[in-house]
Length: 406
Ligand code: ASP
Ligand code: MG
Image (tube, rainbow, N blue to C red; front, side, top):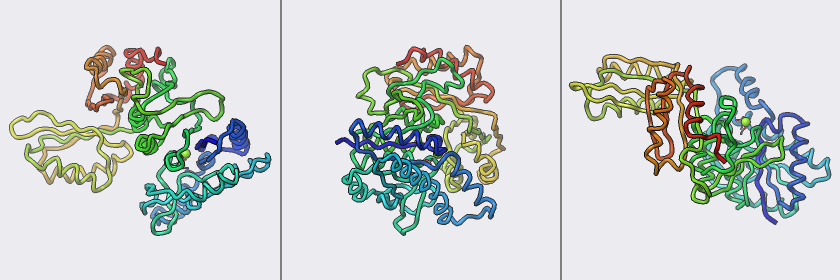
């Protein structure tokens, strides 16, 4: 019998009625002859509510106890789904992350999975049980409960699919799949039938919000075939697999955008070795992630350096940057949180030099000013004014004729 790993996100298990819908779905897959491992997220906004509750106690948290608290959300939904399955006469058992053998490092609230000992899961599968596993949690090498970072149930599911050598990992969510752009912005946006791991990884980290980026990375590393699909509908989702197995290579597969962007610029930075290191090391030491960086041409012995960070880290970053400005003798700095990032993503663009020009042309035609540009093999991103973002996404979608994509 082949094995499927399925994952149901918070919105798919948000109420008992929805949990019942999940159970029906599992019964169907069961009738198709699959062995099933099911990973669940916490019901609806449970994780946020638990965080809020802890917030009423104070704001200095013991990370160990926070993980102990947050892990309860997934245990609740795992048990409720199992009870529902049993009430329908379907043999099922729920397991916590640690019962399922998920071992992590000790980084509370953002732990990484080190290995999975699947014996217990296997035993339960041999007894013909549907095995329901609490996502987002594991046990650290020090024997403490850990959680895997927000959205971490995706990573639990992909890692389990890899270890159990599942035929496929199905991520059930509240959207139909991966789209060529956010359908709320572009009404012609099309669902993609397939995307490559690389494309998914770029789209996930560019704020498409469908999958935890770490899960896409884990799937790529272990070659787990993924499908993202709607738990409320009976239709095919988007399949995510190795690029060279795809039939049609497109230049551009999707337009991603991200509003969680702030820009910082440093002026008249001395043009000397080690300066960039001093700026970015300071930020790294404070766990502030820098995304795009540009350095202007040198004027005399100075140049300007600008970079972007997550907007929600701006208040934390500003004092650090001001300190660096003093230290290195730059003339000053400025920042803006009214910018956004628009990106085109596509595995096919590596071999097509016209793509960048077409992107800039589309933005120019709409009179949109570009503040910064960054490229990788399969992505080109531009920072623009936030107010222009919808216009930019629509213009790029039209330019690359993504309404015709299959
Ligand atoms: N419940 C956790 C969260 O909301 C994990 C997950 O949903 O994947 O982030
Ligand atoms: Mg969630």
